[in-house]
Image (tube, rainbow, N blue to C red; front, top):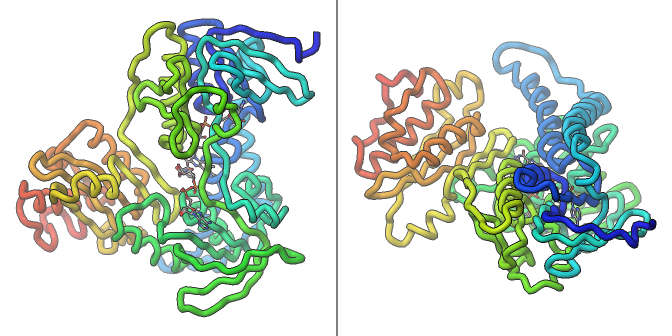
Length: 490
Ligand SMILES: Cc1cc2nc3c(=O)[nH]c(=O)nc-3n(C[C@H](O)[C@H](O)[C@H](O)COP(=O)(O)OP(=O)(O)OC[C@H]3O[C@@H](n4cnc5c(N)ncnc54)[C@H](O)[C@@H]3O)c2cc1C
Ligand SMILES: NC(=O)c1ccc[n+]([C@@H]2O[C@H](COP(=O)([O-])OP(=O)(O)OC[C@H]3O[C@@H](n4cnc5c(N)ncnc54)[C@H](O)[C@@H]3O)[C@@H](O)[C@H]2O)c1
């Protein structure tokens, strides 16, 4: 029988076999054995193949090179590090393949009757057409459907004319060695992480943005600090005026107005587009359904149940246009799959305190509500305060020569509740976890100050910001210049 004649009928169909899709599959299977996961591309997940893991592997190599270069400041002279681009990329790819291997093993453990290779599109609210690579198709009739189709890089259409000189993150992790020069467009999370890592591995990097933003930061003080700090390592103009982007014989020709107002013409090997990602919902045939969409064409879904305006269709992960992070994809997949697996009722799932970390140096982290959101909600009544610590004179940070950064902690007037934080600074990934746990436990700033702080540690910087915040909320004493009884430099 040819595939084009195949018809399948299931309780739950899941579009996408990435992190959210796999989590949805497992959760739905708790309720019914009639589950089908449809995957259009290679299994292994975006996170393991071209996302979180290979990017952190590249950053790990870069951090080592940087640490080596910095050692002279401690009186340890190691000379200039020799970067072997082939060896760097070989480790990135072999470790990446190891991580992907674990995912593939778990996918192989799924019964063949529960998996279907092909591209799924809606025909009706309950029917999907799945196109296979050999041109045939399968019609899938499903009582409930989870959309877990992920996202893809988005960039201005004219850049496609750069051909093989235009790269996105996926391409970088296929390199056999490192190029000499790149221009990164988009100083967001991906651009910052990959651009800085490549710079530290000896690649010439120019970075251009629009509107002045750096990473996910929304607090103007921290954004200014980030702009200045990263620009010490590579050319960064987060509000750039680029007049020309053109393919040349051996790379990409650029003309831009630099920060001093001079016109600069230069050429780089590649243009790396890190200008954001778009949810993969535009080619799912959603126009055939009477489903409520947001301004990006993504089905609107309830935050807690992941149910769309069509009660038997759920959405999870990057496709949902909510919070495009790995742990969120896993949580959302679990909630959506659980609800799709249940027949009649939907249940609210656990949505944790928002937490995000950027693995740049200094790192960036966001916890709870962002400055922008708090300012919008409470700014007009002056109902919140900002506690600050600078890491420049923070004891342990200076000892370790990582004394760059600022943390802003936000608290609510009256209740004294901790609302959120933005950090650019050392160990921000770890500080963010402390703060996120406190936020999810709905702690007040005073309660957080009752917690133990060791000496000398970078976490003492968090205590300084908390003390500052508590004083500004009129819940604690005025900040004195330095707390000597807390330990020098705390
Ligand atoms: C460079 C980079 C670095 C990152 N680093 C981090 C990090 O450090 N920490 C972090 O938390 N997050 C990070 N992320 C984000 C994280 O990778 C994503 O949030 C997460 O992988 C999303 O999972 P998902 O299941 O929604 O999508 P995916 O894993 O992409 O799965 C979606 C799947 O759906 C399939 N699909 C699409 N359309 C169809 C269709 N019509 N029919 C069938 N199948 C379809 C795709 O082939 C794909 O396999 C990073 C992302 C990138 C790109
Ligand atoms: N460490 C992590 O957790 C991690 C790492 C990488 C990616 N991610 C996830 O992936 C998502 C996507 O990352 P991203 O970096 O692609 O998106 P992003 O939204 O973080 O950044 C895109 C940047 O590109 C800029 N930009 C847009 N158009 C531009 C143009 N024409 N020219 C120059 N700059 C332009 C934007 O102003 C923004 O600064 C993130 O939001 C994050 O959730 C997470």
